[in-house]
Length: 569
Ligand code: ATP
Ligand code: MG
Image 1 (cartoon, protein in one colour):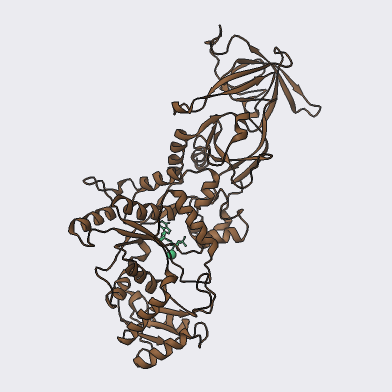
Image 2 (cartoon, rainbow, N blue to C red):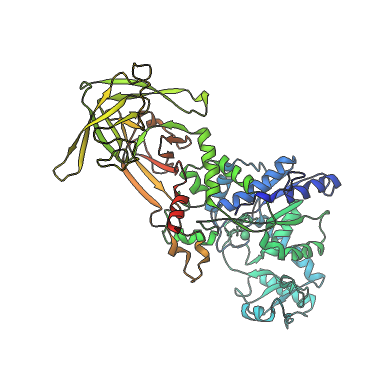
């Protein structure tokens, strides 16, 4: 299911852009649009985050506003600086810039502490000694009101003194919490005296050991928004139930007006992958993948390494649109956006990934010729290049069959094919090794069948790619497929862990590939279409001039859907 109907026909705007436009018209925020993208630095960004980045930075761009990159670093147990750096690199790679609007929630720890004191002084927050279990038991259920904590009516003085002792590290982790005093009977469970501060004697990646208490998301997020003057605080749907608390905190403190407002949209879910940082971390820790930047991962760094372009991610995000409901989007839609973009920008080249050697017996030993090949039929500016041709070439193992079925139009004994940009070639002889495997083919070419030649217009049914043996460069080619073999690996009905569904065929290495010589200069940024094979790019990590490694970004056609359809039959 895609979200084609996400945009109202009248304005072409999604509901968030609609709200922003109305606020601008009504001058709600003094003509300003200030959004933020608030990642928690506890993992690498994935394509779901890209949807939020495109929306938040996009809104700011479209309305001459700004978008803050704010690290929501309030949970020091899982956060670190490696993640901060990776997140910055990924946002930039996607094509967005925060200039001097980089912030950390941890910058506000002192101010948040002062706001907490303010709530205590107003009698709107109290220190509670309940354990986590008691807290949960007293909380009630969605249909049954909670019970007030026995510590709820402590005096303001006692609360102030205890809260400061919490800060000074006088109590153990979990011994006390600071809670808002709201309403234990509220129908919204998040308003039943929620926790605002917890004791955690953990070193923070930025503030070190300065704090032994840390604010909860619900307390820190809304206040960070208000401190930064955010106008539209856009998050995913699961936060809708937190919105009354977001508003409660802001409305009960002396803050600059107008206050930020929270809006929620449906998160991106993609089939055949997972979109939770916790689970992605599990894959990394269990070494089920090579790391966060494994080309099969849905992380931005993994996708970049696989050769995915930032443009295709942005185009995908704009295609799925912004809606008020959650949906499962097909990976096939992403693949479509990717192929569409690569088709426009990729340089064409010839590479043989499973080579067999061909000797052209009617050419002399040292024969050598330069042929002209088109770099990109979609882009005239890309020009042409020369491809060397000689007496021995490689062709694809799959382009030859000794006993082919009826509709096989590639090479067979006695049959003819056209070599791309070159001659018509006939297979005269299959030369075998002692064990029966093919050593090489002996072929002849029609010397007049090249472009401009007397028999150039002679038609044969198949055209195949090839690489000249003398000039060929060796490379390892890595083929990637879906990381999981089922559409929703983390929603298994029998309760199996998502790791049980890792696709065992998601990675394959072909170590003996033969590439045309122009590819020796390939850089990781340059995308290629290896003719008839797929889109490829140099692996940014493992490739070197001595040992070239290319990743397949995506196959030319969607063989996955076809395979699935076949299995269903
Ligand atoms: P995860 O569930 O992967 O841990 P998270 O929401 O905890 O994600 P954050 O770092 O808090 O991760 O996310 C930063 C921002 O990105 C949040 O505003 C969040 O709403 C948004 N976001 C996260 N996942 C998605 C998604 N799948 N689709 C759209 N937005 C997302
Ligand atoms: Mg989060």
